[in-house]
Image (cartoon, rainbow, N blue to C red; front, side, top):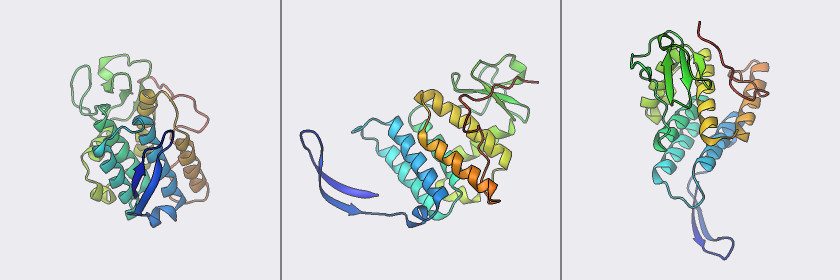
Amino acid sequence: YVKMMLGRGRDLDVVSQADVKESFPNVKSDVRRVAYGVYILELVGHFVDERQPNPDLFDTLLSSMYVLESGADPEIAARHFELNVLSLLGYEPHFDACLRCARPIGRAKIAFSPSLGGVVCRECGIAPNDAIWVPGAAASYVRALMRAQPHKLKDIEVPKQARRDLARMLKWHIRYRLERELKSAEFVDAINGFEDKQGRNGIPNPCGRSEQSPQIVPGQ
């Protein structure tokens, strides 16, 4: 990242001084880390207006870039960043209990609804039209990521299926809030798909690049 001194111009600002504080060489040398770094930056760009100061969000962004630089799993770092950004901006989804009956979430299937801002259990009947159904265990991984400190992300292991579920829920929640798709999300999906085909440790695209909206799966 760069510390700059800007001079106000009529149409454009003029950079009068620039001091590089960190170049993140490990991120730049790994295409998967680059993909997630670009995604994180685009996410901030859409959630925050230009010239709108937000020191807490900047600190969260910088912390996430250092996590990517440290060698932590970039996908886990991105999920952690998404949850932190949503919390800072007042869009934090609720995964502790059913929003209708307030019962704690167990391992049974739950319906995650962006319009409700959280989950509904199967016992509460029909879920909203925008809900996607996932195993209740996915909520426990969300809660773990919400509580985790950045330097502890290396110690968090999330199974492949739970990664898919987390990606589906947060992608859908962010899309609902922004009312748009993120272009860099397609880049991330493409990189992960390529790595899977090559037998590397990538995670399959949770939603599919051609998907226009999350699949609604009825409770059973």
